Amino acid sequence: MPLALYALTAGAFGIGVTEFVIMGLLLEVSADLGVSISAAGLLITGYALGVVAGAPLLGALTGRWPRKTLLMALMVVFTLGNLACALAPDYWTLMAARVLTAFAHASFFGIGSVVATGLVAPRRKASAIAIMFTGLTVANILGVPFGTWLGQAFGWRATFWAVTLIGLAAIAVIALLVPREEKAEASDSAGNGLAVLARPQVWLGLLTTVLSWVGVFAAFTYIAPILTQVTGFPETAVSPILLVFGVGLIAGNLLGGRLADLRLVPAVLGTLLALAAALFLLGFAVNDRLLAVLAIGLFGAAAFSTVPPLQMWVLEKAEGAGQGLASSFNIAAFNLGNATGAWLGGLVIDHGPGLAALPLVAGLVPIAALGVALASIRLERAAALVPRGCA
Image 1 (cartoon, rainbow, N blue to C red):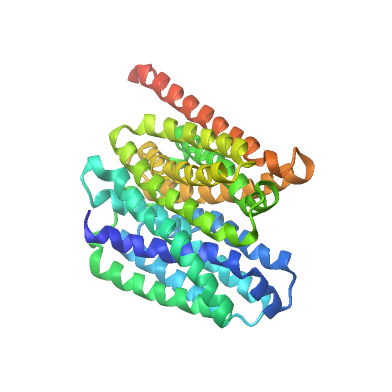
Image 2 (cartoon, rainbow, N blue to C red):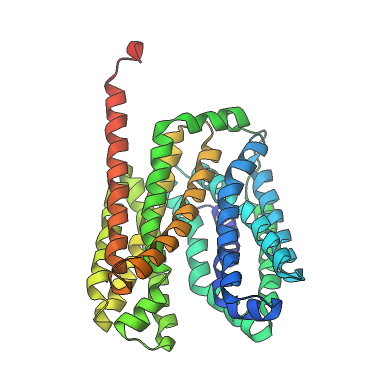
């Protein structure tokens, strides 16, 4: 894999830390800014909504930009957003800075996916995407725990100062290592980019992504109370168990990329089925401590094994024209799934069968995603049978 790919991984690491580290600093933020914990929690929601809004907005405004220039500009936005978070004097300024930072998220991963696939041979494209997303998984395992410790030890602003430095480092390595295009691709112009969104296959791919990650976050958002209140672990055991989940993320991400390189469609269908199976297994394993830990690791592996195949699938449905925009929309789809999954999980806990049944209910959603993927395949095959003159 070329060094330029690891420059993208560095940017992904910084963005991953920014997205998730706030979860471990809610108490510090709420106490310092004089807001409730639930209000501090809305900083997570605001970020997710910023990701969803940023994909179409920046996609339309920057469609003709050279990709390296756009990647560097996005990292500048990311860095300035984190600097604004570190300096925020009040809650609403911090919220605005979080949303600003989130605007760079979808476009960076979307354009980065396109750039990553262009750096390698065709048979390694999905693996290249997986390498870039490894930055996100490592952020969860190492960056977020360290950022949480840093914020608890030296104040939550110290964490955002540290991420600002990560952003500066990412700008430098992208500038140094990512090759520059002579000119922007014509297919990435705003008009052609938006035209790709008229394709049913693209929208079915996006819907598949949303549904798959509704299932992931319906369970993962509430994994700590599941482990403590259902399985019976002490609170001190949650962090080590989440490390098991994180190791599963890395393994599943790399495996998903490899499988997608071998055969994309079976990889999409197989990883969705594996995700549903892992959630069902977790649902039956939560009453046994050893089985629960093993199931958590398998859940992490199955969850991120879906990412490279789903990202590659949407890129293929875009068929060259507007790939950057379609790819960015798919990143937004992951985040929409995150937010919807957290809401669904709360609904199941408050008005459904309860916390213990949450993994089982969550496992039904990837089955729905699998149904959408099968419908997309059937539609594509039917279209291929129509003679060109009759289309």
